[in-house]
Length: 609
Image (cartoon, rainbow, N blue to C red; front, top):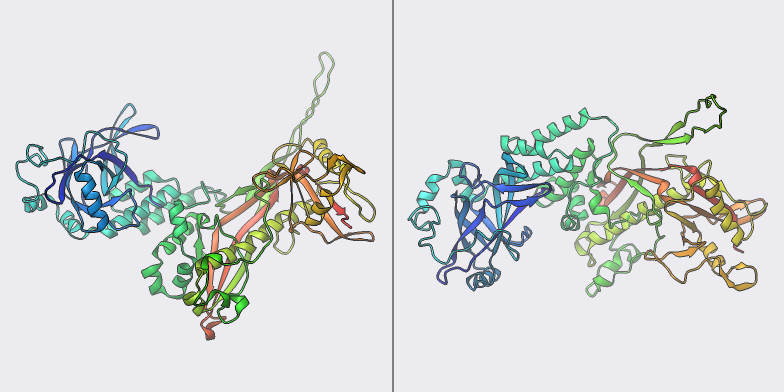
């Protein structure tokens, strides 16, 4: 999303008469930015007033209607001046009263930076384009503000009252500026905002600023960005797995609008512009188009994926969401398996393009003792690669047309959480126990070369000695470092919480200690974090032993989870077309790799009987 800039100034108390108040929007005072001091030139040639008059809002909240407008804007004399005309809403009247009383004194200008005009040491002077002005609480420029009277203020460097001299002000503007002042050039604003967003996303801010100044269209700029990306190597981890959404923007993203946008192109243009643009931004970043519509990572941060049908006719499938008396805030969610892979410390790599190969050292050089005048033997370290290539995990949910219209707890919340749950759980399961076959990633338990601690021919009970042997296996491989933790099944947790370290001696303590849980709810064992998961197998066999459980100990930061793009939402309106129902298919491209097998050791034959 666009990296808007803001410049704050002080407002002074205004005349009691009238509702238009003279103000100074900005001066040429320097403002500290990251690595330099920024000066906004107030020379008329350097201030683009094509967006005038400017909306006056509160605290830069662009989701709310403006409380007024800044008119008759002129640059000159080191200042940008204008007239603040307040509206007739209750909020506008309240703020106007506080401005007149001298309580509210500050303005902040939102603007786009133009070209750099000059540099002197740390100070850089810029041309710029103001696009809004906000009433804020904290001033930054004490040299500007509201004036008590128009007389003697040199407000416009003229003796003419700017309110009366409206025609003269209009004559000073170009034809395009007059057109913008009449209807606020929304298309131009959107063009600049989209270009800034694309530039920030792909670390091409300089290219974006040049495109804005030269009048380049959004489509042409997208093509230029794509050419630059293709000039880079095919293997390119993105700078960030996100497209630049703020928390508020991610929270306002609507899955329902994204779904309906694919059902009805007219709805997409009218209601789902934000969702469609987010998908286009991510597609541009990835260099490929979705099968349906991309959902950016920011939106998925608090979501899980699932496969479950929702309908109003069947109570268990959605009917309980429809009713005349229903506590929406008390909606009871389906209990699901907890996920632990990332909480244990797995390393995510997002925004991948192409296959990824992570270099690894598999052998070391050796040292030799030599005699006087002798030379050590030549040895070299050996290297390998840990490959990652996209594997697609998918889920779907069905819901009816009436479900969208009648559900009381927001269908948005239901679809979002239910879709995201099972995909998240399946990624978690694959990290622990993926088979590596049938397009499934290879998990820790099935990785060749991890340490092994065997209990018996037919399995057996885990003892304190076995726990220490798991730690020893990592230490023998010099891998006992990093985000080390144990994870096992609920059956093993139950057994070890009641098993003492020394047989028959409760004073020696129990193997699994849950007395002092950490912030994630994890207990401790042998001085390390420990948790249980239903994604760890508890149905293993060995000899005549059945229903055996696994336990893993390791450095979980050596589990790498790569993700290619965001969630791809595909709407199927034909499967249930006769009933007006809609199937939503969710697809996610990920892969899992173990950076060093020696970082893990496992028990695969634990009995809990």
